[in-house]
Image (cartoon, rainbow, N blue to C red; front, top):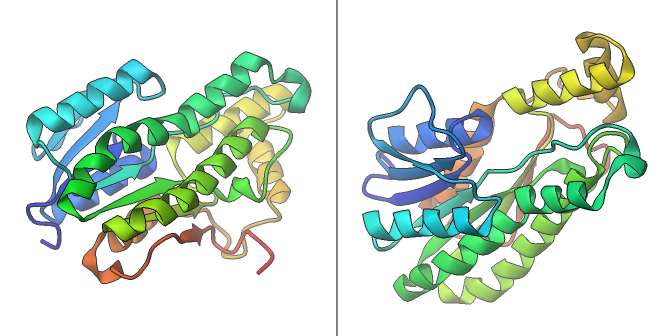
Length: 256
């Protein structure tokens, strides 16, 4: 019951990494509000599910209103929502609309929600924020996720800058950069690649693994493993960890 009585907001908390984090926090005694564009079929009784599209200003405003109505304050935020929906094909297929969608999905939800909720944390003089970035910020895949990788690079840069500003006010800010994680979204991305290349799922999966340089441990990470890291960074056990980014990629990044 490490988080008993704590109030955490987790965006994108109904699938994949987000769902694993929500489950972990709830099991540790936290009060959790999580958001998604659609309500999940399997709900935890201890979690409040807010239907909101946080890629839009209106969705962020509605989620902030929900947090303030339920709690009036907050102890921590984990920004998980994000993803890539752009077609394969490199720069030539990325229209302005595709670039805006990548930024709106992967950067702006964190910017807008932090801007709205940080004043509450600063008034308390404590709190923690975690941004879920990606190793693609330094290892982009030009064929399939160029816009996503650029947006995640912006998120990591923003996270570091924010940590410098709000650290002296008692707010810890860190980020996590997962590599390949076995989620519904990653499976869908491989399916899109297979369709684009006219190949099958396994061939596209191997091709994507090869484009990353391989995964030395021989498998992707699992959402629960990322949740364990997020729980540690949110806890008092990590009280001196601030302004850092933790990579969890099975050794995919080949450099120091």
